[in-house]
Image (tube, rainbow, N blue to C red):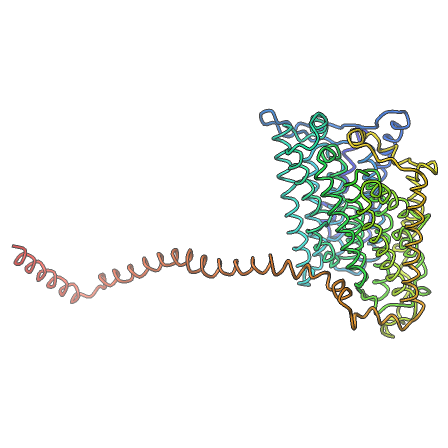
Length: 639
């Protein structure tokens, strides 16, 4: 693999270049071949890389491989190489990025078939895959930062893909700006890491960090800054409002960037830097608190949203909060396990929503849907599987990953567990609400739309089926130990070994685990049945979703806690007002006034002096006489 690992990110980059230059020349078939083929080849190479790591772990080795290509930066004692790190953590992320990325590329062939920017769209997707793979494979924080910035750029390009719509382009700018706020934290953290450890290489930084004392101020600063970066990229409080607005982009973008890959970059970065974070208990507590608050608030907002993609967007924010909760309580394996299962069922939910939108001619309001179960059978069955998975019902994937996070949270803090459990109830309700409003009852759209409803083409439904299988079976990758599982935990053990020595994983009895499983399962079933009675059993109750006669909590949820309005009043509007003042007063009247005033003064004086050279002889004679008179007067009075 030493001769091939560099091809994993390079081939999608080549696909971007080819489709970028040939977007108006190549046929759609050739564009498809280049875009999908490049990602598929990367997926095959990623499988080979994973196989090597698997073989090493099976043989009792750590399964960690370094690939050095060249020395990049050498300034004084600072040496930064361009090299890749392949280990159990990065090998799984490679499979997620390339595998799900390939399925979404295939799905996009059908979804974007009529879009005039077809070639440009696929070139952007390939560029995103390249930067995400660079982020995952980098062996130091600088290469990670390049990938980090690159996926942010691609997010901006894809969210605002339909840029002629002002609201869509504004959503892209909002995502770009809020991500830059977080990225500043990453940049400052990198400077502190250089100042503290003299290097950005993971090996050198982590080995030196292992010898530091617990709770040091320097590590607190570094980890808080890294967490700030993660809050921007992974949409945590207070930098979470960009992700719901990012639904302005094409639905495959939502599935790829905002469900399966880019938004999990923050979780990956913290998991990769686990030794730094466990040495800073204060930061761990901050991560857990922010994570559970984000999960709860986003789930609360999702309860009353009517746009099918907005519900899934806030669901993504909520699930990311769960992952941060897992990281904060030291359940690194559980958090990454949820990254894996979430990639399956959330990509499936977004693609399923895209299939519904495609069938309904771009309709996204669930109040105008209903009765689609028989008209879109494949979409319905696959979305049902994903809904069960995300709701945490056994035996699907979300049940096992969410249960592992909640179990570790309970042993660490019963209060945080209670908030997380309440969030799980909200999740089951709003997801089954989405399912019932979309597929049950009578169709509530126009007759013209109803006449044209049909299942999506196979190029879109086959990826749904594959993701449904993964969503159903993915949980068996890390079954509880009492059921003979723990494969993922054993596979990732070398990555988290040092962190687990400093902060050992909490111990619990099997009876505690079973009780918590039963409680969460029963609670999710109750909420699913309540959603069924409210939105499916009685057709008239669909009107409840139309936001009429809302009480205070319903209105608060529907208006998204007025967070955007608060940011607008406290940050955006004052900045706009100060910008207008600086433009009109300081810039135009002050700076421009001085510069242009000097110019006008020179022009005016030149215009006056020009009159002395009029060319009229009588004027020159008059001036001579006038001059002589002044000379005589000066001579007379001067003496």
